[in-house]
Image (cartoon, rainbow, N blue to C red):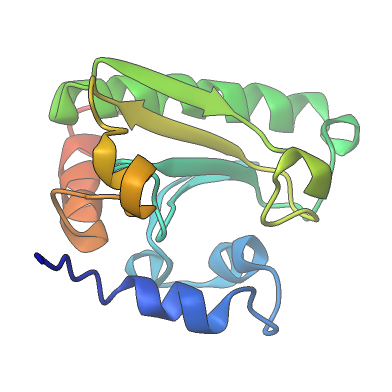
Length: 163
């Protein structure tokens, strides 16, 4: 039997939710963007990589302010978040050439939100066949590059695509 090792997943399995606070608020307060995988900071919101991605290039857009619902966002936050979604799609299209995207928000536990109290939108690049037999048969995702490698690619591309 072949084995597929993904040791970086163990942190997610062991830790689950962090008791040290909201991951988005911690990232917003952090000065070292690389430490929290922040790709871009706007005035009201920011782009952060998902360190447990569904696919390479999986990022999230979230406001700096800790709010849990769309209704709590002010117009400037909502507009900037949508502008950042548009921008990150352009950047990911340029560097990764996906065939499509899933873009959305899971609002509330029943809708699948892993972080319920701080609203965020997911941008997930998709390729034909990326949900293959590994996901179906063994509940395992195969990612062709590390989160650190994708982060570097996004940072390098960011220089070519001003927001």
